[in-house]
Image 1 (cartoon, rainbow, N blue to C red):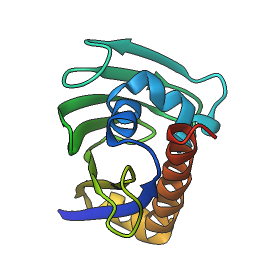
Image 2 (cartoon, rainbow, N blue to C red):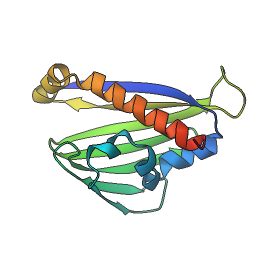
Image 3 (spheres, one colour):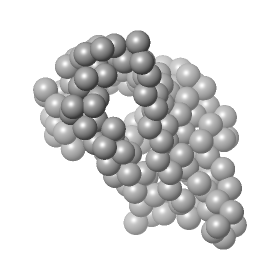
Image 4 (cartoon, rainbow, N blue to C red):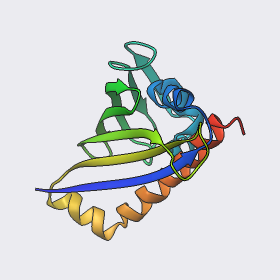
Amino acid sequence: MSTFSVSRSITIDAPQERVHSLISNLHEWEQWSPWQDTDPRMVQTYSGPQSGEGASMHWSGNREAGEGTMTILSSTPNQIDVAIAFLRPFKAENRASFSLGAAPDHHEGSVRVTWTMSGAQNLLQKAFWVLGGMERKLNGDFDKGLLRLRNRAEGK
C-alpha cells in the first residue's frame, strides 16, 4: 500500500474568518468547489450541523462526479480537516485539510490558504494515479477551486 499527498496554496485578500466560513460550511462549497462542474444535476444532501465539526454532505452524480460523502472532522480558526469517502466510481478514503494563516508577503487582512489531500492507494489505484495523470489533474482542480474560493471571499 502506497500513499499520496497533494497540496496547493493561494493568498486571499479577505479576513480569515470570511475564508474560514466558506470552507467550514459545506453548503458554500457549491459556490467554489472545482467539482461542481462535473455534473450540473448532481444531487447533494446535507446532515449534521450547518457548519464546522460534524457537518456532512453526500453527493451522487454522473460517472465523472461519482458518489461519496464529506464530513468535517475538526474546525479551528487555522485548520479545517475533512474526511472524504468515495463510494463510486471507486472506493477510497482520503483526508483533506485546509490550513489558514497570515500571508506575510501581502497586506494585513490577507490569508494564506493551503489545501492538502492525502490517502492510501492500493496497487490498482497507484497505477491509475500514475497512468491517468491524477496528480496533475488534482493540482489543476485544487488551483481552480482555490481561485473560485478567493473570488468568492473577495466578493468578485
